[in-house]
Image (cartoon, rainbow, N blue to C red):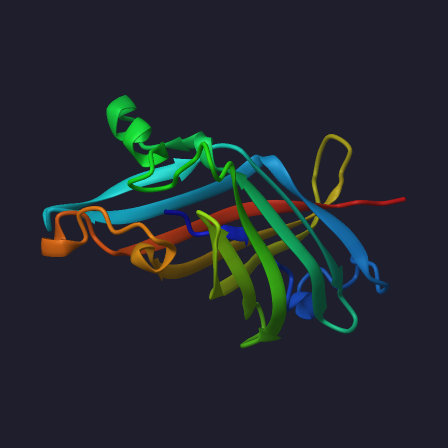
Length: 202
């Protein structure tokens, strides 16, 4: 049940950087990696109609290539450790790893591969890609917002992008049919991505 994957996530980013931080961003295509210390891949699923259950994936990595001048993004790849699912309830997390849901033993990685991108505004865009969960691959569209682009004010002062992305999937389309009937556990999964990506200089 992710969202991701972003995710990539995940992820694809800077879509519309031309109006933000253009003075410090490189004009030629640059490689970026997701910053693991500033990466949230979360999901919301309705439980019995009462409230949404919030969960996360705690381990993931990703990268992409972004060209600020051409406003293009490519080579988007985000990989999530399936077994890292966490919802602050041990029994539920073990159930999520089981064949009823993520089948983590047989499918240790959730993967998002970007296939395209388009700007929708000054700092917004869409990332299209293929999301693979439980060995099933489906197309998804991430709505992405660029929050900030620029050099960090301390430390190594690396150049980073800060982004938010959202999408919704149906878990039944990935073979997760457990408790869908009767709405015991919601079929729709809202995916929430908040992350920073660091430009790889040199």
